[in-house]
Image (cartoon, rainbow, N blue to C red):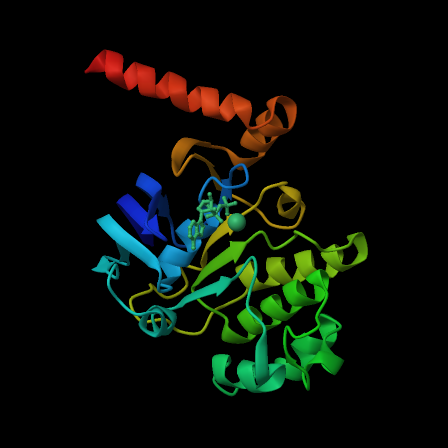
Length: 256
Ligand SMILES: Nc1ncnc2c1ncn2[C@@H]1O[C@H](COP(=O)(O)OP(=O)(O)O)[C@@H](O)[C@H]1O
Ligand SMILES: [Mg+2]
């Protein structure tokens, strides 16, 4: 289980996340909605432990262990894996070599690549000259090969065409439902945990989501049933969520 407690994060000298708290339970899929620029990617990058995301206060705990200061490779070893919204190009690194390392030599790579229509990309440098949809499929290929216990997905559906989204959605579904490698500290058979960022909510057609959060201006504005939240967002837009946050803040102030 992932616990984020009162997290405040600075990027490039600017505070982006403010006192943010949320939990992701083992065996549950949690969805994070939010308008552009609200800090969703910053949150995922901070959970994964990328440099440049400076935790000013608060804690990130994984299965009870404080991982706030652990380097990214140690977090990956503990079972966290991430699909980035905009991964970098890796000139000189072939996709098949990267996948071989992340999958710890798993023999399934060829099959997964075929299912994602990515076989011919295995010989190419990672993301170099890939289209938006190809980058997403490449990310899912790497993540499926890694098969982490905590799956972080940053807008898996963005930039993917209608045909590819079927394949991608099916793969995301399989990844979340299937058994994972053993990860230290995770209870056997308790299943994977997932935190999925979505702006449009399209990925909800492919995964069974259990809990939803809405982020506005670097903190959590509301939480609830993800489908109900999505319906509200589709009806009212994100402005209503920002109002809900303001209302809640007023209530808290009144109580004080
Ligand atoms: N390296 C950076 N330096 C300065 N500001 C940044 C940096 N990275 C992200 N930001 C800012 O943080 C805010 C949140 O960005 P992001 O987490 O990408 O939002 P989202 O994923 O919700 O669209 C934006 O205003 C963005 O410009
Ligand atoms: Mg983002």
